[in-house]
Image (cartoon, rainbow over all chains, first blue to last red; front, side):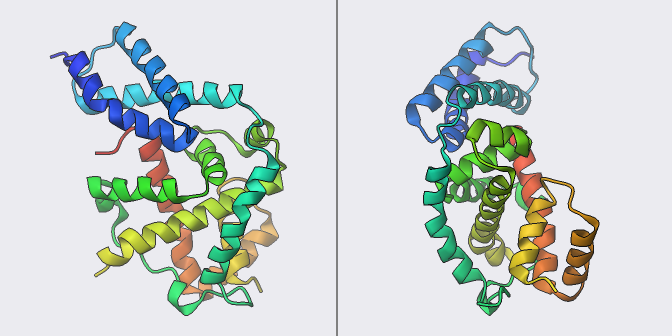
Length: 192
Length: 60
């Protein structure tokens, strides 16, 4: 069978928009990237058996559009705007660690029960998206360049105009924030 | 001895660069005796797997 592309595109469009918006944090730019993706998709001649394989294909096109957008806006994320994200991080660090740098009792990471099972639940991905969205904008952008778009840290340095060590600090903050959010809003409740 | 805060920094960096032998040794020693950081390290793996899945459109 071949999918009814038009109706599948309409159904998947909100997913694509959210994906683009998470990374670009700009409604106009996200809309543009998705428009271009849809255009490319409509002119393509691949055949798909299922919605999920179609979605995977669309996301791969969209990822490239997002990379193009990021490249064309290069250095928009300046080191100073990253510094603005830091204020919130100090707060997070104080909540998580004591003065000697050890975990606060309330913040000690627990064991996450069966993450693979969580990955199969739509609700988990809603929480995951919300947690990404909750990260400071520039921090999130660097993190998603690394984890979704496959940039290595050197490329990120070049695009964003920060040093390697600065990049590692930003990535660390993103991971610390994301795992804390996931633990609080998902895994802590799921623990047996 | 590394603090937990320093250990979490290294556990992030090992996802992005080849950490040195000394760093690896310090980290191994730390997670051996620190259950919280041991869990954290596994969670870094889960995060990466989740991102890979999300970033490729493979979510349900």
